Amino acid sequence: NAGVTQTPKFRVLKTGQSMTLLCAQDMNHEYMYWYRQDPGMGLRLIHYSVGEGTTAKGEVPDGYNVSRLKKQNFLLGLESAAPSQTSVYFCASRERGELFFGEGSRLTVL
Amino acid sequence: AQTVTQSQPEMSVQEAETVTLSCTYDTSESDYYLFWYKQPPSRQMILVIRQEAYKQQNATENRFSVNFQKAAKSFSLKISDSQLGDAAMYFCAYRSLSGTASKLTFGTGTRLQVTL
Image (tube, rainbow over the protein chains, first blue to last red):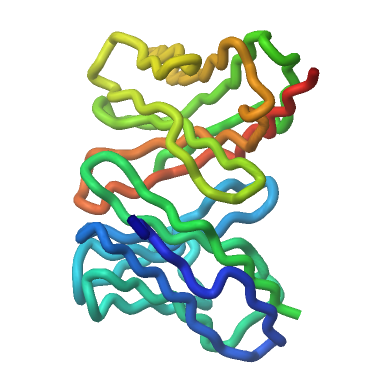
């Protein structure tokens, strides 16, 4: 069982570059989420989706865009990366009450 | 908006001993879920235990148990017979049952060290 898979696992960007993080789940879950984790701040919700074709803003959406064109995939985009977006990014999908997390993607913006 | 507070940035426990991690939360809702997640150095987020607010009985999972005090809005995690593999970051999380998105709100985490 693959569960929730995030790619890439690591990435280094220069300020102003763009990139996309891919989250794929094979559990047929409707709900998907993108979180960022920063030291001393826990996990904060960036964007989420309640089903194919839908997206909504979370707690810290600025500087990010998302798309859910297919039910199994949830993409997180950075159009113009900034050093403040250096973080570990987690994708999750939900089944009933439990969230299933990916392994995280460490992004460094220089 | 709900908030979750973990006031202990770091805790230490000796192997085989018992440790309690604290969590408080703020909400005006009467029904919700509470969770404890473990994050080892591998970064993977692992669900440790879950508590439904409408249940008075405290949840238990093997060596892990909670002390859920709804009136006090407190949700502590007790780890008994601590093992070296319990060393990790532990996050308390709240999930509202209102709305459809069921978003989780996390605390800032407690780093648990287990010593010999």
